[in-house]
Image (cartoon, rainbow, N blue to C red; front, side, top):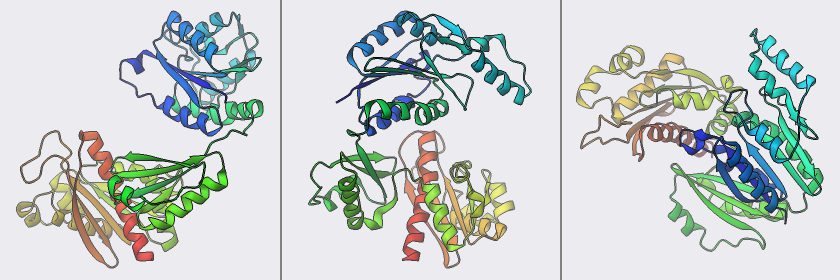
Length: 409
């Protein structure tokens, strides 16, 4: 089997200020086309460190990919290190420079002279056009080995891999060893309870199952060399746990929710407090969300909960803003304000301060109001402020998906 190596370059990764999401994404993509990552290294922005990592990777693996260090600033030294390692002279590419000039002209900006370095390409390397930024990718092959260099910006790196590198890799190494995957996304059941339900589940020969606990939910990933058997295993499993499956493969909660709302012809509106509009961002990240999503309110202060959503002052005095009663009134208020068919509310204690004995940090109340009535519930989340807010926003969408699926059924 062919092997690949991923080298992520950047001091910001080693300092912990930037998460290494590129590695996780590339590892999945490479495994799926039969080029599993044999090892990965993260190195600092120093020529010697990059050269040592390249030497090890180039010796051990068939495919080597680097990310980071292709920008125009002084610390973007990856290209020079690559040229030095492969003993390739850097050559000015007029076509790349012209693309950079066009990009800056479109934005009505003057081109810094430093960007000229991005038009330099090592001799015998192929420049890979980057439609998402100014730093082109690089491709070099020597016999059975292939080398790629991408910008560190995830959006640019993914675009370059999918549209430029992946076709080249499939052409050269074939797809006969491709690993097929099918993922089921579940919600409303713990990993241990799910394991009990599937204790006697018979997987087809050659199909493996990976358990992937997420924040508040569990993903089940079936994988193997046969697409037919992987898909069949996933479909069999789906039937056994159908009430807990909210989506498959690349689905997001917002995407699935919007599809259900569109089918029903319903409009949705949100009222958020502790999540600060995060649930609304998740929804509006989906193209075409306006077909089913009207909008929302971030009513952080109690005064706005009263003025915009009609939350009763007695409710706030007797129960507090973090209460199921307040959540109900917020949901009813946003539904009434926007004339939507359904309203959702989220109000809680995200921390790190503000918690009490009765309502500790992580306490979040959810409210839902539709044409049938209004209901609410409370859920406790673990984690820091950011993770609590993210989990709560996602939980609101997943809870509505589960309710609507039952309603449809």
